[in-house]
Image (cartoon, rainbow, N blue to C red; front, top):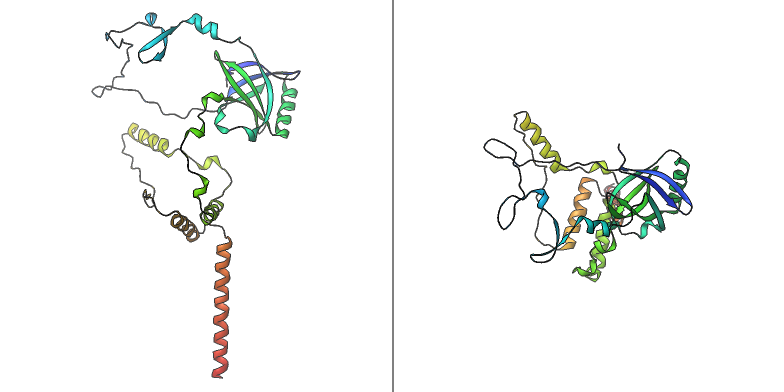
Amino acid sequence: MASIWKGSLSFGLVSIPVEVRTAIQGDHISFRMLHDEDLAPIKYERVSSTSGDPVPWGEIVKGYEYAKGKFVVITDEDFKTAAVESSKTLEIVDFVKEAEIDPRYFETPYFLVPSKGGEKAYALLREAIRKTGSVGIGKIIMRQKQHLAGIRVVDDALILEIMRFADELIDPETLSLPSSSLVRPQELRMAEQLVTSLAEAFDPAKYTDEYRNNLMRLIHGKMKGKKVNLKAEPGAARDTQVIDLMTRLRESLDGGKKKGSVRSGPTAAASRERKSASKTRAAKAVKRAKRKSA
């Protein structure tokens, strides 16, 4: 796995030689645009929106549209002037609690791997971050762009997480969201019971991209000249109508009990007690009837 960035990770007076390597792998299916008559790939030309004539690369500049149809041209020299000083050091300036960071700030993960001679310092920083539940925050220049970066621990690896800056996130207060006062206590109790009944340990392998899998099955079938029959998963269609929430919660809980997937809660225990008491009363009545007949 090739390195994307080489330099040093520093905190305090400690400097660790490290390399940045990708931590994710692309899983996208790409397609080419073809002419339906002969399946020849389609080429795209750069043309002027006014004259319609092709424009060579040498006559193309970059522009920022500050108003509709109005641009200011930015040259290569402008980009150089705006660029911050390139550095091969990622300096951690703060350590913050991971629980305090909104997950929306995290964007793309990379592995941080120690270079030769940096193994002990790497392990020391990793264990310190793990023990304190912290994230190291700093900035890194990668591919001619400055990024906010977080240093986290996953198993025995330090993860460099490219983060979003604060002005990239939309404030939830700008949205029209319902108040918690709309929720009735009995509805909340039933919803909590349903959530608890469906609680499981997180297993990422359990969740797959069904759409991608179906596409690949179709593609492989076409490659072999076969028609693939994709059968829909059995199950009732979703009801998109708005219904009473309590009714839906009861149906969900009842459905879980029938399947045996809902864990026994206070309601289930009470039901068993009632059934047991009913059986006891019935047995006593039979005994009394036998004594009278005797």
